[in-house]
Length: 104
Image (tube, rainbow, N blue to C red):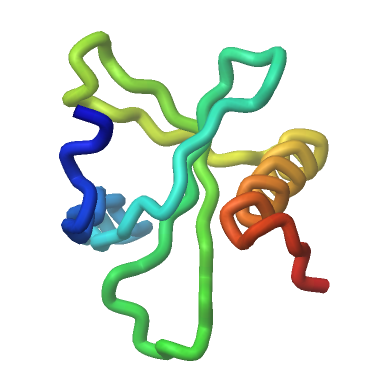
């Protein structure tokens, strides 16, 4: 069996992230990736209940999973150097998914 999901729409991965007031907000995971030559793993998420649907706000987090993959810990990306690496990797992966064309 090559791909059991062929012909079926894949269910989005949803995570809940607490805001500053402790209210859980719902986000869809749009991409997970690892950075070459690093053990760091990142995920890109978008809010599920965006008030302005024209705004494509994407949030990036470094994350760690437990051995089973049931518990995920998210970490804010705080250094400019790490942001640059994540942004470059994200843009490269998006370009590959779009057929190799970068949107500038």
